[in-house]
Each structure stands twice: as C-alpha cells, then as structure tokens.
Amino acid sequence: MQAIVARQYGSPDVLRLETLDRPAPGPNQVLLRVRAAAVNPLDYHLLRAEPAFVRLFSGLGSPRRPIRGVDVSGVVEAAGSEVTRFHPGDAVFGTCDGAFAEYACA
Image 1 (cartoon, helix red, strand yellow):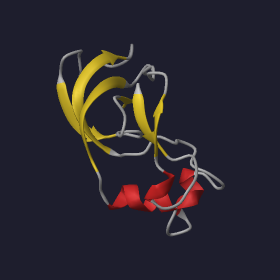
Image 2 (cartoon, rainbow, N blue to C red):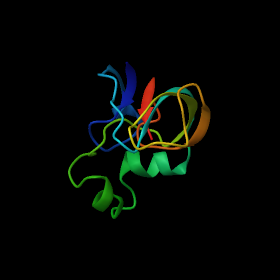
Image 3 (cartoon, rainbow, N blue to C red):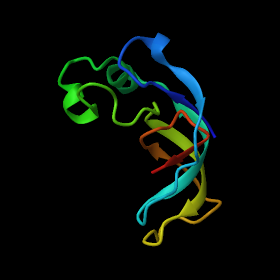
Image 4 (cartoon, helix red, strand yellow):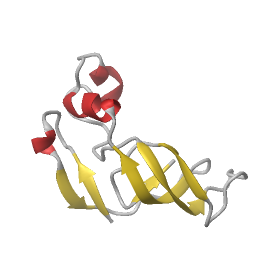
C-alpha cells in the first residue's frame, strides 16, 4: 500500500510517499480502506513536534508511528475477532493513527 510518512520531525519537506505492508487489525480494531483523510492542526503539531511536549506521546527523537494523518473516512475491509459493531462493507468516519495511507487500522 502507499502511505505518506515522516520518519523525522520537521516541515512538510520531510513527508515522503512510501510503499509499506498493509496493516493487520488487532482483536479490537477494524482495517479501513481509506476513501478520504483531512489535514488539521493536530497533524501540523505532530509533524513538527511543536509544542515540545508533543514528543512525550509521539516519540522523543523521531515519530513512533511514521504514517501521518488522524481524521479518516472509509470502508471497513476487515474486523478483529472482538469487534461486534462494525462489519466489512460498512462506511465509517472518525480518527485513527495513519490516515494518510490506502489502509489504516482504527
């Protein structure tokens, strides 16, 4: 799958399009086929690690999760074993880590 990643903190110049493996959903997650993702102020702060306390939950030296994006909408492709509310084919929207990719887990 294709994804927008930032392997270091900085300006939008650090963003790269990379080919990565499709994520696998955990027992209480769903795998989404992303249809749309929005850019918002949180994405900016996580990309630049500003203010500095952002690094406490995002990673001290570099981002723990390199795929950017938080707001997402898409279609459920697969559901974990403990998921009962959502099923493949359901259209959903919300937040997740890594929305700027073809697939994301939420």
